[in-house]
Length: 300
Image 1: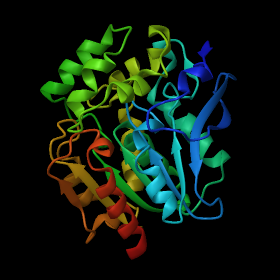
Image 2: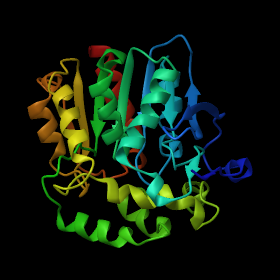
Image 3: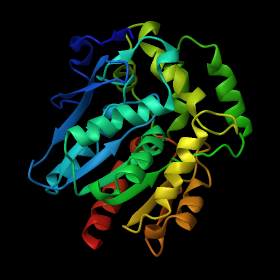
């Protein structure tokens, strides 16, 4: 498997982002070494808050939340999924499967020996993060899911049909066109440049281009059995489980209600929908999210 690595200079001087990089080396099933990047702020002895992003973003999405959570006394870890941010990027779309993403991040999670985790996960960070919870429940103290879901082949929305169809033959991802409509926050040129920074050329985009094809909404999608198995674990998860969704998000609409109904730990929790938040909720209501996260930790 050919692997690309974004040059470090691409991450110099990014607007609003000055976190030191940390790396973990995982090994793919074919023997290929993959370097996974994560931000690690706050006291190392504290129980970790794990922040997981979605497509096509990276740890930069959490730049406004990391300092607030760390200042409250927590260890805050924001990981870049493989193919995103400062993590390594397999070069071919065929290199990316749902099973591989689950495997890569499982190796990262267990390799860092994280326990007592509070997980905050959005979009693909939620799909992958919830799988990790189902397989390693002993490592998680509580979960907060935001604008995400774990689909099991129950059908596509019109939006999803359009999105998957558009990306099936694509070799590039329209970052400049897709990011701004997914947030109420008016993104600055510097912020947009930071989101584009991990991708010096189209050759680095195979991971973010392939993500839409891996969403297990079609009944014959290869990820359906994996997600159905993950749901079995989530339906036994009795630790505190909270949903914080954006009312304007069209991608995961209704997934919060499904999780509240099916996951035991969600019963009686202070679930919330932010009326003026879109899909990239971390850009729209970062301070409010931090307030809910810290209150949830304190109460549970």
